[in-house]
Image 1 (cartoon, rainbow, N blue to C red):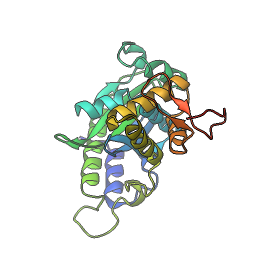
Image 2 (tube, helix red, strand yellow):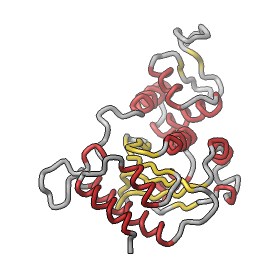
Image 3 (cartoon, rainbow, N blue to C red):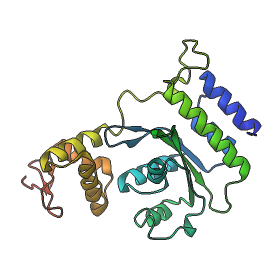
Length: 249
C-alpha cells in the first residue's frame, strides 16, 4: 500500500495541482533528489521535464553526455535499475559515469522506466544518500508514481475522467522549445556530414564532449554554429571558420 504522502502527491498530479511536483515527489519518497525526463527524437534522448534539486539536473546531464548509467539502462531494458550505493557498483559497468558521479557528489541512484510493454515514454530518476537501500515502502511509492506518470503521459496529460481541463498543466507538458533541441539539430548535421546513422552521430558527439571535457550542449552549439565540423577520422574533428582558435573546416 502506498504511503499517505505519496497518495497526496498522486492526487495532486491527477488534478493538476502540483505546484512543484519534483520537490513534492522527493519529499514523499524521502529521496535526495528526483528528476523526470521524457524520451524525445529519433535517438530517444532524455529531455528533462522537472527536477529537484539542481544536482538531479546535473546528474541527468551527465548521463546524457556519457550515454551510460542507470537511466539509459532502465530505458533499454524496461526494468528498474536500483543502485542506491554507487560505491558497490563494478567499475566496468559504467566506467565513465561512476567517477564523474562521485565528483558531483551523487552517492546512489534508482531509475524507473516509464512505459507499457515495448513503449517507452520516459524515466524517473531518484537520487539516494548512499547510506541505506531503498525500503519496501519507498519502492512501492516509486512504482506507484511511475505508473501514474506513465498513464498521464500516454494520455496527453489530461485529468482523470476526461473533463477537458489542463490536468497536469506545466507539471508534465513537454516544453515548447526543448532544451536539448540544439543536440538533436547537431546530431542531424553530423549524420549528414559523415553519412552515418543518427545513433552513430550521437555517439560521435558524445565522444567528442567526453574527450574535450565540455558539456554536450556546448559541443552541439559549436556544430550548429559551424564552429566545429566532424570528419571521417574519429580523432580528427576540426574547428570551423569562426572558431575562437581560428581553425579552418
